[in-house]
Each structure stands twice: as structure tokens, then as C-alpha cells.
Image (cartoon, rainbow, N blue to C red; front, side, top):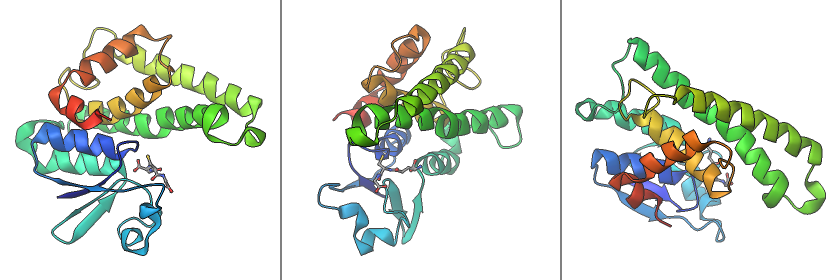
Length: 201
Ligand SMILES: N[C@@H](CCC(=O)N[C@@H](CS)C(=O)NCC(=O)O)C(=O)O
């Protein structure tokens, strides 16, 4: 399997999953500065020209969480996804979508309005809104993790890879400082050998 990869991108969560599974893979380096991700060849794999995408036997997939979930299903023997149709499977979808839709969005907005956007385009109001939203989302994840080590069924699953990918990114910018439970969770996840390998800069 080929993973189109940049260490400063969401491709790291797919790499983490591949490492958890022990799936042999090739990292195809993508240089954002050179615009590798917008070259016609790559745009055939990803219609938005974003990372990550994977390619295997002439077939490709994009969207980081979709790739992670697909990999978990391809290897049921690794038990990184609850069985389809069970309540735990529902919770697994719930937390993966919560990570992608509810958690990642305010994190990106906070970073845009503090670092990434040119100063003239930053908005104090948008920053405040995203900050309040992130606090509520972080509190919800924190509450879920009270008395449990992982998000679903008290075993490590691909939901932790997706949520971990999002929270590790947030933590890099100090956004988890008020949430000791989330810091402990991120600490547990990043101690895993697969995470160490995948998240190393
Ligand atoms: N929802 C997508 C987001 C993909 C995305 O925005 N990737 C960033 C890097 S983390 C990117 O490639 N940005 C450059 C661009 O889209 O032009 C996913 O999770 O795969």
C-alpha cells in the first residue's frame, strides 16, 4: 500500500493505523511547498488535492478517518473495530465522527485565527466562538474518558487513532492544557510503539 505522506499532515493518523496493523506500506513523500499535492497526477487520487490518500492494487481512497476505518475492517483479526451491528460499533462511529466533525473543526478555526491566517483576516469574534465550542467538545470527550482508558468498550480501537490524531495535533498547540484527563489519554496513546513511529517528526 502507498500512503501519500507529509509528517505535518493528517496522513500521520493513517500511518499510525498502518503501524498498529503491521501492514507493509510505502510512504510517498509529498512536499506542500513544492505543491506536490496539487499536481495533476495526485489530483487523480484526491479531488481536492489534500493529504492523505492511499493507493493499493490500482485503487485509491481519501479522507483520513475513512481510510483508518477501512483498514480496521480489512483486518478483523486485529480487533481494532467492534463488530458491525453491535452497540459498540455504533459508539465507534459516534466517536470517530465526533472527532472529525465536532472536535477537529474548532481546533482548526482556533489555529487559523491565532496563527495560520494573515493577521488582517483574523477575527476575535470567530476565535472566541471556536474557543467556546472547543471547550464544550473537549469537556464531552473528557467526561467520556472518566474511568475508562479508551473511547469504546475499554479496548484500544481505530476510534482512538482518529481521536488521538486530532487531540495530539491540538496538544501540540497547547489547547488541552485545561483538560488533564485528555492530556493523560494523549499520553497513553502516544506511548504506543505504533504511534511513536508514526508521529515522530
Ligand atoms: N478531512 C480531510 C482533510 C484533508 C486536509 O485538509 N489535509 C490537509 C493536510 S492535513 C491538506 O492537504 N491541506 C492542503 C490542501 O488541502 O490544499 C481528511 O481528514 O483527510
